[in-house]
Amino acid sequence: MRIGVIALQGGFAEHISILSRCGAGAYPVRLPSHIDDLDGIVIPGGESTSLKILMREYGLLEPLRELIGRGLPVFGTCAGMVLLAREPTDPDRSSLGAMNIEVDRNAFGRQADSFQSELSIPVLGDRPFPGVFVRAPVVRATDDGVQVLCRLSDGVIVAVQQENRLACSFHPELTNDLRFHKYFLSIDRGDVFAKSSYRRSQRAA
Image (tube, rainbow, N blue to C red; front, side, top):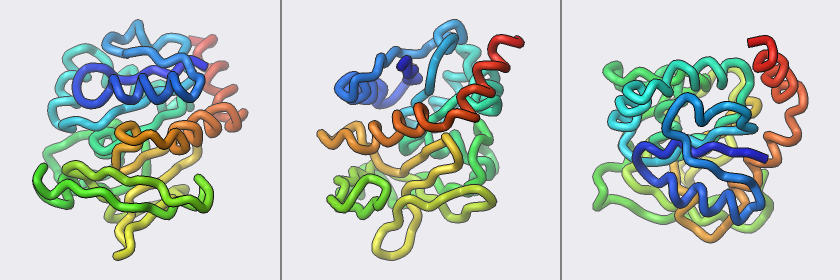
């Protein structure tokens, strides 16, 4: 499997490392030519506004929007979740518009307010997952087709899935737990219809 990781800003190196440990081929993506023949894409944490500006300057924003719309599996963490949201609550931030979610940026406060929490994520099994939250967003609302994967004890949504699109508020790449990345890889392999339709549209283009 060939998984690209947007490598313009933020925690891309950690994602590449953990994907490699999961047995996938993980490649940094900085230019439109780097997204050819990928089986999935990861949008890492970082600073969402800076990441969006860099993606636009490097010519990645529109090609990614198109490929994700055509079925390319995608996994966004923290800032990546913000970019995947269809309706961010901050009107000054556009997005890839790939998921039917409404997101608040920096919902927990500043860097000093970062925290860790043991998360219950049933799709990953019974063992709690170590959630690392750093200036994290949260999902305020979901719409059609979105499955909530994880909530905090107060009910706040911090992980969601919409078909083969996955997003979480926290940073699984900053832990030694491979389960969330393995789950993304299993979605990619298992979603035959989305993957085959994406491949057909690639060949037609």
